[in-house]
Amino acid sequence: MIDQPHRRYSFGPFHLDADQHQLTAKGEAIALPPKCFDLLCLLVNSPGQLLEKNGLMRTLWPETFVEEANLSNLIALLRKALGDSPASAQYIRTVPKLGYRFVAPVSSLWAPANATQRSRPASQRPIRILVFPFRRGLGISDVEHLAYSLPEAISTTLAEMNMFTVRSVQLGMRFDPVHWDPEQVGKEAEVDVILSGTLDGCGDGGIHVVTNLIDAPKGTLLWSKAWDVDANDLFRFHQSVVHLLVRSLIRGVRDDSTIDAVIDAPSNPESYDLYLRANQIAIALDRTIENIALARDLYLECVRKDPGYAPAWARLGRCYRLLLKAQPKAAMDGRAALQALERAFELNPDLGVAHNVCTSIQADAGQAEGAMVRLLRRAESHDSDPELFCGLVQACRYCGQLEASLAAHRRAMELDSNMRTSVAHTYFVLADYEQALYWYGTGHPGLYMDAVALATMGRDQEASALLWSRKDMFRAFPTEMNALDAYLLKDPTRAVAVLETGRYLKNHDPEGVFYLARQAAKLGAVELGNDFLEQSVAAGYWSTITMMRDPWLESLRDTAAFRCTYEVAGEREAYSRSAFLNAGGERILSLGRGPA
Image 1 (cartoon, rainbow, N blue to C red):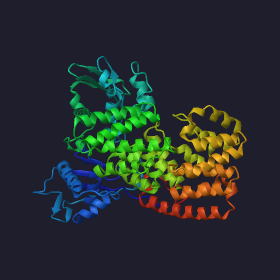
Image 2: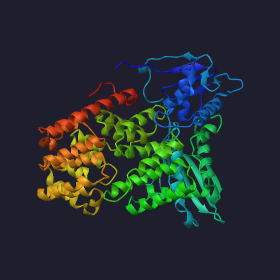
Image 3: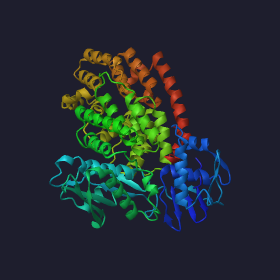
Image 4: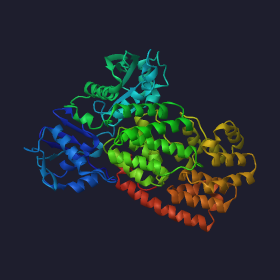
């Protein structure tokens, strides 16, 4: 593959590096929301040419219908950042009813792609930040949820900006909340700065908050600020902290409009409080069915009071999906999760939290290819978000792009070595069971996959003992785990009977159905195995490498049904490969080879 040159442009006092996602003027960086940056690149790449509104909207939002006002808002933000105006346009001229034209002279500054490293220089790379859970003082029993949910909300907003690489607040929960050492946290969490805080009551239902920004490598205090926050001003506090962080850490931020552009504002204080309470339950507490259901109800009440609050719709979609997976036999509407995410994207097509929680929902709904393309396009302007690459691990695997799935995992780990991805399942379908065991056991309690990996390797006694220790968790994956348990106990009749019940589960995800196929094949239930395999491919999960390499599928390979399913999988995989290449996947994930 021939290296493409970097795209660099100069106009007026501005320098634009499209590949490094950086706009500067007189050596100072100018912060732009991701879609604003994309729009500027489109305009600068076609100086003097009319770019029609419809074409711009299709390019900027390829899979989402948006109103023309979204484009107008981006143009207004861009003009403000460039110091331009419609009346006396130096850069962007409106062509009434048609579109826009970039009118300033543009110089292209081309350089070979190998002239610079993929990673930004230390002075340019995003700032790595961890927001610690706030410590709780006295007199705040009614607002204890804010100790976690406010830092999490601040982190989510910072993650929307390509100026930061944000560590999860949950990572901060691993350290002693009182006696933590900034330098140690900085090394283990791989961060440049840490935001910590304390919450205390201050009478009349208000909250006294002290926030501290710490230089992690040096262990020194950069600034400390006290805030008296009324219960109705929680979002304004959130907003103010973000503004203060950006202004104190990022050079060249000319005004706050570019910051506000990425912050979704709730319409009223009550809906924001409901959102924070739901986040505390859904993210910080144990992921039980009861907690997820309670969080879902709070998100529902939030969107009832504020139907235009996109983050709540995104989190609601995640709750629906988790409930479906935890209760596969429940009479639930499987479309609810996808509909909630679609509503979030309608309200804000660039919402980072929606992009990050949507992938699993789309994959389970048979739309993994669309998720893969969506994430790759977002990565063009937001390549410092490890959650985005975490989503690509799953989306690429579902589409049979296994090398790309591994590359997405590597990129996520480069950005955050504490990130948890689903790469264990990618190694599993590549028949690399030792690596699957290693990555599955990193950072979370296991359920099923490590046990079936041991069984596939012939280590049945280990697998059986492991499953026995998880008897209380069988309800999470009842068909897979009960069938595997019966197989390991040398009871194939019961194992096949359990698998037969899986034919009638409406809410099973396509990857889960693949695991059922391989278990049925191993038990010699050839017709059932082929049936599950066909269902899995039809539902949106395929890998021709896996179909030919997995040892438990051996009994299926000489059958006509398997060959038919394999042919369909091959066609879909080839189409997915084209979509991956057209979306710039090889370049974005630093893959230099052609199709595997």
